[in-house]
Length: 289
Image 1 (cartoon, rainbow, N blue to C red):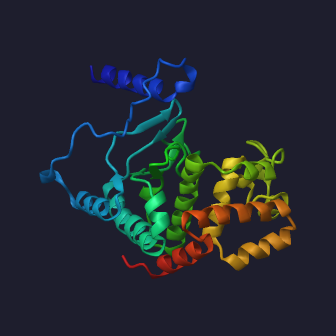
Image 2 (image 1 turned 120 degrees about the vertical axis):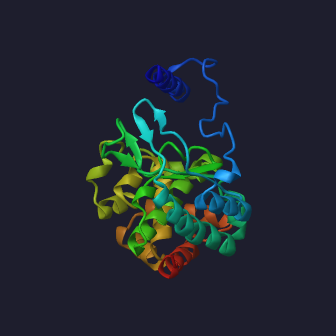
Image 3 (image 1 turned 30 degrees about the vertical axis):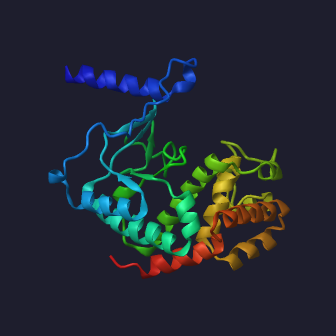
């Protein structure tokens, strides 16, 4: 009986998620598979629940770490995190490295663009089966501008390299939300129109080749949405002088045009991405555990 119930549940999730295969009207657009059916009694709260509560009160962001494994589509999965990793991840990455310094240093951007929900995924997003090595950091979770999600929580480390890579990836994923919310802009999409590598072409490109073609790295040349997000990613990861030097070396007018567009777009939202880079570097290097 339990197996039958599980199979029915999976089928329902597949129908609800793979809506492109069904005519309009057959899919309930109001279904939210992360909505809470019941509130966890406070008498059952653990340390992480109290921390999540304090974060929501301080920053207006609900941290979601307890849920059943999710099927984004018929072949795409992601799993909840281990408690012993989710707790320090939330303390260090979300509270000390992301939310607190962002609110203090860029209050306008924080107020206007911070999502109200953040989902923790234990591994990464898994394609085809839960043990596959084909993964993505946040694919499938960041198409809604009110909800951000990140994978890799079970790999949490206090090493500076891991912390820096993860927060940079978080801002990359958040850039997809900005894209969904406001769009990249008519002019941005036309700078490299007809020059994108597509699914089969991007992985063979070196960083230098990609930059000469107008993209920060091969993956940025995959499609316009990744082009936009990698512009944000590189400005958060690298210094202003490094960015401008690479533009000069590449001799790519396309790379320079898109860099200026994205930098200005974020300035208009209340954050200088070069100053955000300085903040991220400083926080990662000084954070205590």
